[in-house]
Image 1 (cartoon, helix red, strand yellow):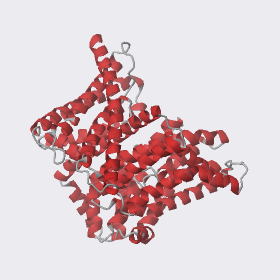
Image 2 (image 1 turned 60 degrees about the vertical axis):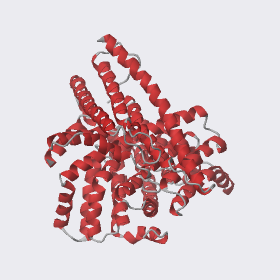
Image 3 (image 1 turned 120 degrees about the vertical axis):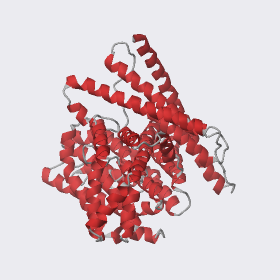
Length: 170
Length: 426
């Protein structure tokens, strides 16, 4: 169990770094694309046929990967008021319940995301003509990463002592 | 079914699930009970965030973050301070006026609350303001962010209902000013009554001019952003991207406070903030489908119209309903789930759609200050570490004020509609 916990925490640390890098990259490319679109239209009077579509798909990846980072840092908006009012000995089981619920939901989202991506795998996007599995894939990938974050949080809560960096999340 | 949905949603909320996941889990339960293919979850989530106009959201968030890190916000605060700092209640007025400037560039109340909470609240407490009041004035004035254009909530309103985003922005100008002025009035009376401190720095036209010059590039930003949209040169998304570029140039080359290391962090932070919003939007889109398939929006609309067909009364009912909803639902989610239905109701009674759009956004801005889900309260509480209960008590007068402005805007539509009319949106 301890080894599994360590492994998951390692993975979560790696994926956090990965997501941070990706957020930077996605944000920069998205901004440049739209600025270029403006530039093309006003300065050289040429339409930029795929900037919009590309930026949209980048934003979807940003949403899913950013959600992983937000979950890790407890940045998702929620009502923590009631949980904080719980007597201390009930807090741990209640958090465990929330974590289990999150993992179940994300598991279903991930599974349905995989099915959805595969059903549409050979469909091509209208402007760039890339396989639609590229944008659709953001949902299962992001959900899977979030499951890992929740698992790490769960290990941290119920098997403390063998973790490096993780903090409480929900 | 309605009962199940409400119970699941509220239970998830009490258990501390993030709002996005409360919506997702409730939808999932409803879909399973209704025997609907679960593939819908992935599909609705994807289509919910796959939108070009929606992309104004990440850009406005990014622009706000760039301004905070690049020293732009600081210049705006300094300039506000020389203008109003010597009035009784000095820093409270500075806080409000700086929030108005900030609201003209950023569209997010949260960014404003975080910035002013970090910079101004410690200063206010040091000068002898009560901590509760300092936090309350910060939280309350930050809600002007989504009213004063540009506004993330108005972008969502436009995306969801097809109303012109530029037109919605134009309706926000007057109520934004009204809110700012009345909040300053309230702070003035409280300052006189409770003897709040004022700033005592020396003031001369020369100093004002100097601060104006320093803040000038920052003050130009709203004109570039709004001018571009209202003049029909840019789409809101493009103008938001231009705002990012402008905020970057300000921070990097004019105020020179932005390093490349900061820049990386700015992108990560704003990406995370954006993701939180996108997640809520995606999940709300599933939730909206569930409600529609149960014909709940139609039932709500019918129930409202059954009560009265008087436009004034309907607007009052909508206000009460939305203030209640705003206590539990994040603003963006509320728009995606409810705006189309409510708009159909007001349209059938001949109420101007832009008027309705503004009323809804204003209601949801009030919701930023009402517990249990008062996002601005949380943010200010988080950055200042002042007890939430104390902030909530101190924010009550401001809440009353905001509801007052809401009523004025509801019943004197010509007050706000003349600007969009002037600009040709109607």
